[in-house]
Image 1 (tube, rainbow, N blue to C red):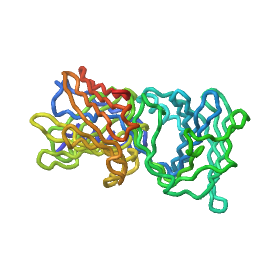
Image 2: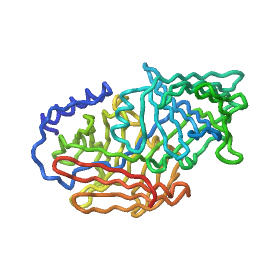
Image 3: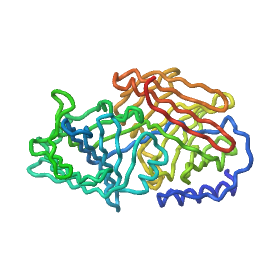
Image 4: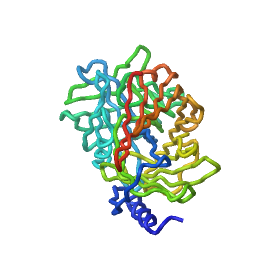
Length: 385
């Protein structure tokens, strides 16, 4: 049984999760040596499932290589919109219509510029073909207006696993799956400050854009977190938990769901708007906990207590020594490669080196947790091996 103090911590965290915002937890942690059974999931990963996704590629703009938007419907709230301007150098600028999400995003993830803008999006069908409109003001004040008219109904044949090319190569390892997509018709046009730009494919035979219905994206991201331990389990059993607070005031709860022999299943929930629920498995090896898998489910902390069953979400599997695989929902082993773990006190680090597919080999993931005093510093980098 948790102590009375721990029950109060859990109650206050639950309030923060229910309202979907950061929680201040008025608990002064006792002085503690950092124990080997402390658990911090080291990878900064996100997973989202968007009802609509659209991208157009630009061949003749001097600075931009494309415009992209992801639309998530929310119960009782306006849709969440994220528009991305892609530059020819591979960098990207994120435009959000949600200030809280933008703040959380910018406070954790590195290598990307983030701005808040009103974004207008509408989609409808005419004779069975999707037509959509996207309007926003860019990060440098341009009026962007995209009219996309599909050439045919969305089809699985134009969907599947997506090669991101060179986009955001030093900031992310993305896994994207389009369930059903359409290419644009000749009526599709993008105007920037009233200057029209026709979509142009990035390679011969590639359409100038896509509209997707049901778009899944899971991403390993470069970034930084500083976590302060507020509460720790008195013993490793179901119902016990760790509570952390990050540099933005967000709370992160690791609750032990099951203990079977030396294997623990742990549910991580968070008040951070940029991160979502995770299901973690760890193995007790001697006097330490070693990570075996992580599944980001895409559920925010306020979206209910029961996590969706596997394989929903993005899953990192580290159960085979020296290897890793990443799956997206029922699509298994989309990215595979070698995995290594090193420990040089006070830092524990993981390296994921992709082998397949070939486009992922330039996006090595390194994740490190450094313990300094009462803080755990989490640093993730993406880049060439």
